[in-house]
Image (tube, rainbow, N blue to C red):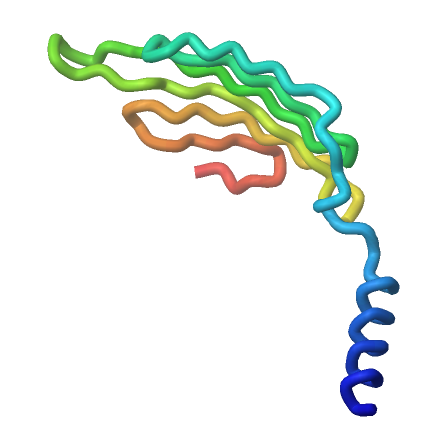
Length: 104
C-alpha cells in the first residue's frame, strides 16, 4: 500500500511539473564542415534559443596553428529578458561580450 501511495505521489508531481527545456525542438540547423579549415553552424530552437558560430584555421607562427572561433547566441531568461552573447575564442582565450556581462 505504501508503494502505491509513493508511486501515485511521484506520478502526480511529474504530471504537475511545467514543461521544461527538454520539450524544445530544433527548428533550424545548418552545418557547413570544412575539415581542418573550420566550420559554420547556425541553429534555432522552438523555445527561442538561437546561435551562430564560425571557425577557421589561423596560423600564428611557422609551426603553430589553431582554430579561431567567433559566434553568438541568445536565449530568454527566467525573468523574461532576452540575453545575447557574442564571443571569440582565439590565442587570447574565450572572450564573451553581452550587455548583462561585466566589463573587464
